[in-house]
Length: 114
Image (cartoon, rainbow, N blue to C red):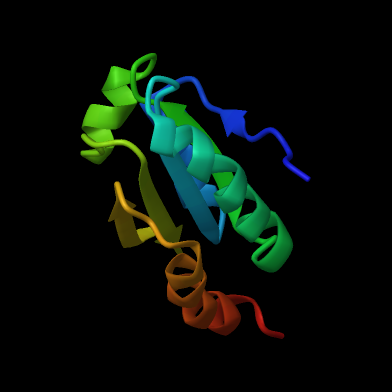
């Protein structure tokens, strides 16, 4: 079940979201990138299914070069995960879904287990 994720307009929109939300994942992609297209639904399913309190947003690297440059995401796909307004992890190119889940599990549980 793939839910469409938000594409924000400006660098400030992304920065505001990172400051406002406890956990944010930005997925940098372009539609000419085959791995980006095959990985995106898997990442969306992972976040929606196992880590629903993470706010996931997309950034099209070709349409939003200023956002890509601001975050230094110069290869696609790139995922940048923020917890508490700070960059926690950055993954690029070859991304394993099980490894990504393992990377997120501990800080997510610490932040959201009440």
